[in-house]
Length: 454
Image 1 (cartoon, rainbow, N blue to C red):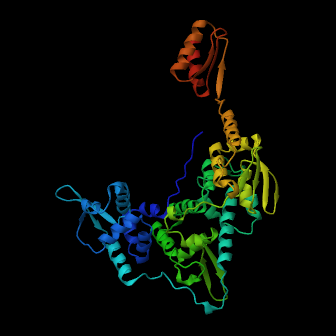
Image 2: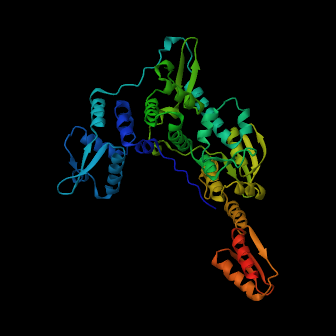
Image 3: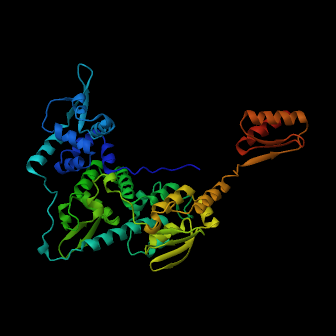
């Protein structure tokens, strides 16, 4: 069964993939240079600060002198990242040695940042404006609700319709690519292998994947990818929980902010005269490296040796995810009770979900009481899941055609040889003169036998 791998790139990977002209355009904004700087690996930051006030080219050997022998691999990673981001440009001197020079636009803006301090993209609205801001707890709950509603649209449209939150159809089309498949309009969309793997990621990894898809499809919606990246980086410098006037945004930025509100990155509010947006933690963490923000989720699943499963959760999303591979028997206010059965797993396998993906999900989401236990999921359960999957792979169905009643053994043997030559041979019974060939070879065999008959 083919494995679908979704690479959850961080924001800097997406920035590095932009064309050189768009990268240079980004570096004209000082706060974007600040976002790039703080998202670099530690050694790359060190090199930037070392070269910040040096206008002449610097040799690679000079940079290597400050690195210990066991740190050369990190040195190479740092230099490669700086070159990818066009922060450094590489050239060869007369002695054919590598030299590096810093991007002048990036260099000037970071110098201003170090000397004069950073400047916020825009000022928040004054607290005397006469409106009530949600608390940080309410804002976090809103972000979780929006994000879970989006994931529910992927898993179960019926459950998503029960939710009070709506996701625009244009946004869903962008995000469903690669996550859902639909054979025809009559059948509902199905979650793909990549879609289930997407659900196994933590929230930060999921967010990077979604933002990457959003940026990748920006040209189709008439948006410039550089402007989009610029605004997303700018948004990460806003204060969580503060209100910002929507009138300070351009028309393109207003369109983007409405899309981001669907995902819970910002909360929109309407007053009598003015409208404003409030960034959540999902937005303010955008420019931070994925490796710095990813952390283990609080688990909620317990699997017993008798294949019974208990999930301590109040989330509809968790319940729908478990339905993908288990039989949910009943749901209490804070407990989901179910079982992993042969039938439920066969249904999952038919939808492209593998046993290893399910086992990985159960391990990653194990309840704290069993998370430290080795193994987290009982071995008899994981072994049986793998056996049930291998049962499905024992027999492979191939469309074929059956030939019999050959006029002579000579014709039968010639037909067998011809089937082997054209790659369509599957099986023969020499005693009864029976032959089975692949369906795509039927026309060749029919033409061959017609020639023999004549």
